[in-house]
Length: 421
Image (cartoon, rainbow, N blue to C red; front, side, top):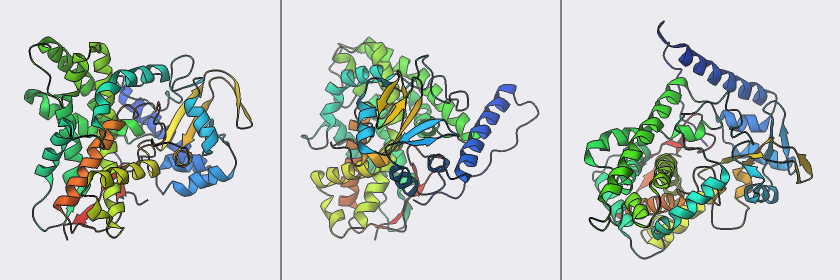
């Protein structure tokens, strides 16, 4: 998996930089150094977290070592075994936080205070509340308003000339951001601010497990805070107008309120969608397009919804929106021939998810941030692929997608150069 080779160090800070900022930079550097040192000693899990090379060889190495690999320096049990992985993801004795309500490594990997990190049971509850609305957006179902909106948004972004362009930066990312603005029903006065925040918050999903550059960490954390400040105002405004008219059929938050979901829960769902959907949509679109262009006849067939949906689902299985799932044992237990003690950190790799039966990618049942957003990710990516295949029948890729640095969780795409043909 090629990575974008333009990563640069943050500019030197002025003498007036706060102690807190210096401390944040130091913590990020220490975590990066720990990953680097462990990787230099042959730890395949650390090499995955370093995110400077294709992770699949390291995933295979972990799988070859048996049901569990113990990363001593990083203090984690890691599995790529499908049976063990399925058991971890389904077992309520594993949570996303430890028994004290803290993330693993939170002292070395700080996140925005507003970051929507909920415990497993809360995520399952929120997903159940959102499902009656989000399930309407399944790509295989009859035409829906959200898909119509997605088609219109993408139609305005696709180029009409014959010059090459970056599918990620010029089309997929603006499309994912604009579509999310529409589905959240963000009013015109807030659109510019919300658009910048939606585009910038993606690295926070990787920051759960891998340190970002200081500038990236600050910008993405600020973006999450901006969204966290905006969402309550947005929900309150929609609550005030509830009952005056039927909600727009593509306004997710208004539909949730109309269905009786409490405003506080709508706020939590909105923030999970805002942070969890745009970047996975971009990456799913880029990898699906690249896959189809490399297979004769499949790009033409993708003009039809079932073919596009099948292609997107296959990519989501092979390259899940979350390549790593982090869990913490809430009690001592035996699993996969090992004794896992309470509060030990457990990591499930995407290599296991590819072999877990079922239609959903790794962690789809109750993943920490992305499971709730999966219906929107599928709809947005499927619509983008279908529309692009119809509008650009001669499209060809100039190379493989480039991956954003320090993105071991998302494997986020940074660039994909294409030519209309």
